[in-house]
Amino acid sequence: MESCCRCCMPCLHRLWDRLWPDARRRSDTHDNHVIANPAAEAAEIRTVSGDIRVPSPKKRPVQLYAALFDFEARSDEELTVKEGDKLSVIEKRGDYVLAKKLTGSLESGLVPANYVALLQDEFAKHKWYYGNINRVKAEKLLLASQNNDGSFLVRISESHSDEYTISTRGEGKVYHFRIQRSSIGAYFVSDKLSFATLGELISYYQRNPRILGVLLKEPCAQQRELFDMEPWERPREEFQLHKKLGEGHFGEVWEALWTAENRKVAIKMLKQEDTKQDEFVKEVQALKSLHHPKLIQLLAMCSRGEPVYIVTELMCKGSLKSYLTGAEGQVLTSAHLIYMGSQIAEGMAYLEDRSIVHRDLAARNILVGDDLVCKVADFGLARIIKDSVYTASRNTKIPVRWTAPEAAIHQRFSVKSDVWSFGVLLYEMMSRGKMPYEGKSNKEVMDLLTSGFRLPCPPRCPPNIYHIMMGCWAAEPIKRPSFHALHSQLDSIYARIYFKTIEV
Ligand code: ACK
Image (cartoon, rainbow, N blue to C red; front, side):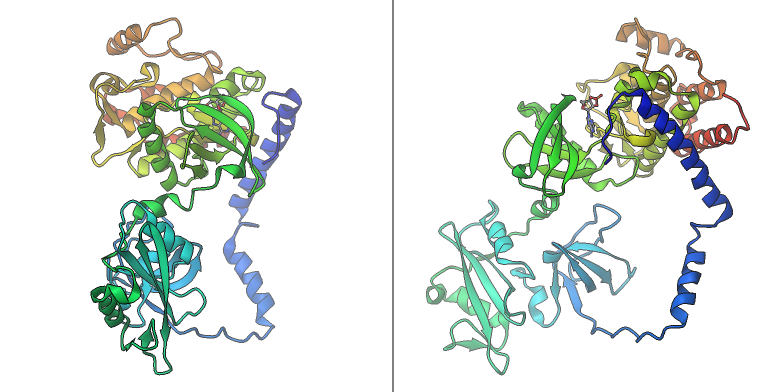
C-alpha cells in the first residue's frame, strides 16, 4: 500500500489528477471493448500458439477420494460435502485440497485436507483415518481438550506414501508407530505380525494394547474449530506495532508491520473485559466468511493469549468520519462524495444478498484508502439472519441517530433498517461530517422521527441525492430501496456528472 498522510492538500490535488483520468480510461475500456475483452485476448493467444506445436498434456490417473466428515462451505471458495461423498482431488493447497464432486452437482471447491481420504482401499470408512496430515498436526489434534489418553488416529506416513503411521495419546504425550508394508502388500508394525488390511491391524492392537504398550481406545475427535481458526492464526511475534490509530468500539486500533508478509496492517485489540469478548468473536466469525473489495478484509488473527489481535487491511486515510471533517473532506465536491457513497452501497449490496444486517452503518464505520476507496468495516453487530427481520435482545446499545424507528423502538433490525442508516450516512457525507440532528437529545430525535420529521437537505447537497436520502427514510421499511438499487442510482448519477451531462 502506498504511504500517504491523512490530510495533506498536495495529495488531494494529485488525487484529483489521478482519479478522473483513471475513471475515464476505465469507462473507455468498457464502452469500446478494446482492452478488457477477454475473447479478444484469447483470440490473440490462440493466434500465437496456433503456429507452435505443443504436446498434449499428460493424462493423470484420477485419484478417487471420499469425504470422511460433513463439511459446510463458509465462503464461495469452499465446497460443502457430506460424509461418504466421492471426490476427485485436483490439487493440494496448504491445509486444504481443491476437490471436485463426482456425483450430483459436480461442483468444485476447497475442503480441509483431513476431511478427505484417498479411496485406495477400505480406509475411508474408518473414523480413525485422517489421511494426509503431518506429525505436528496429528499431535495438535490429539492433545486438544476433546481427546483423552487412548485417543488415536492413522495417517499417511510423511516419508513413505504407501505406508502409514499410528499416532496415539498416552499420559499426555503423543506416540507414533510406523506401519510398514511387506513385499506382498501386508501391513505390519512388528514384522512378526502382519495383516491383510489396515482395519485388521488396528482392531488387533485395540484388543491387545500391551503389545504396543499404549491404548488405542477412541478415534481422535474431529475438530472443526481448529480448522476454522488455523488458516488465519499467526504468531504474535510476526506483528510489530508502530502507532496507535485510535480507540474503537472493542478496544485500541494500531498500525503495525506484518513482518512475515512485509506489509502494513491494522490491528484491533480486544479490551480485557470479558463481556465484550463474545461480541469480538462474533465480529471475527462474520469477517472471515465475507470477501468483497468494498468490505474490510480480515488478514490474520492472534487468538491465543491476550490481548487478541484481529488483523485487517490498513486503510491509509482512516475512518470516513474523521476524513470528512479533515482538510481533504471539507473540499470534496458532491461528485467525489457520490462516488464514495456508491462504493458503500455496493459493499452493502453484497451483505444484502447474504441477508447480513450490519446494524451500525455510519461514517465512523467506513474506512477510506487511496483514491477515495471506501470500505465497510465493523461487523461487530452483524448477524446472519434466517428470516428477513432479526429481533435483537432489548438491552443492546443502539446508535439512535443512525437507527430506523422500528429497530430503535422494537429492535426490528433488517437490511431495510440498514438502508435507513445508509440515508443518515449520506447525510453525514453531503454535510461533510456534520452530526445528524445536531443539538438534539436521543429522546428528542425519536420523538421528531415519530412525528414525521426528517433531516433537512444539507447545504450544497444536490436535490437528487436528498431525494435518495428521503427514500431511505420511508416510515415503512418495505418502501425503502434495496442497496442494489441505491448502488445503481448513485453510480448512474456519478457517471452523468463525470460525463458532464448534469452540473453539480
Ligand atoms: O478515524 P480514524 O483515524 O480511523 O480513527 C479510528 C480508529 O482506528 C478507531 O477505530 C482507525 N482505524 C480502524 N480501523 C482501521 C483500519 N483498518 N485502517 C486504518 N485505520 C483504522 C479509525
